[in-house]
Image: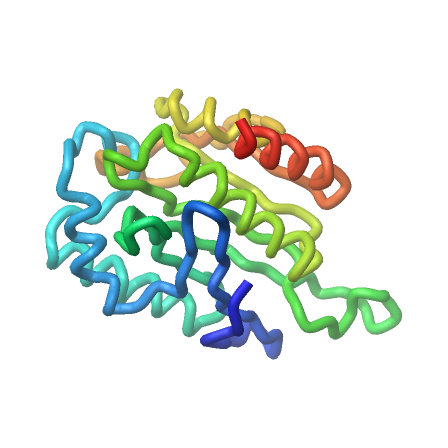
Length: 219
């Protein structure tokens, strides 16, 4: 992991925005400098993003970055650009969001700690030539390792559109557990009110999930 570049606050809690580096991809703190790369990354077959909120075109990408950075500055998200190490090309984006700190009582061991307690990983998308590569698996390994071993998270959630079977299969492959369906949970990418399939990984489950992710990368 490279040195921390940015820091944001969440109710007096400091959140780090690190560069997370693997063997095939690198997650860099999202910035306007990634705009051209994200425009190119999302310019392929739009049908691949039927159920995902992916910005298409420069105006949409700039709004996407602006929103992500506003969430970062509010302390509720840490967004990344996904970079392919082999050629330095931007191949997508992902983020921690819905970052939350519990109101622990003063006598509790977690009271006043530096980092938050739970979060969600989402807003994940890849360029068409990076889908079904190791990019998503390695990104999840990097992010979950940071969440559980850096931030000492209790739980990391993932949600996906109930219609998005490919995403559901990908989440299940990394070892997340299905919790149920949240009805009328969010606005879908097609601007309908979608149901969401909810998954999570708990801190106690992380060692097994980590081993599974590492095994998948080795294969």
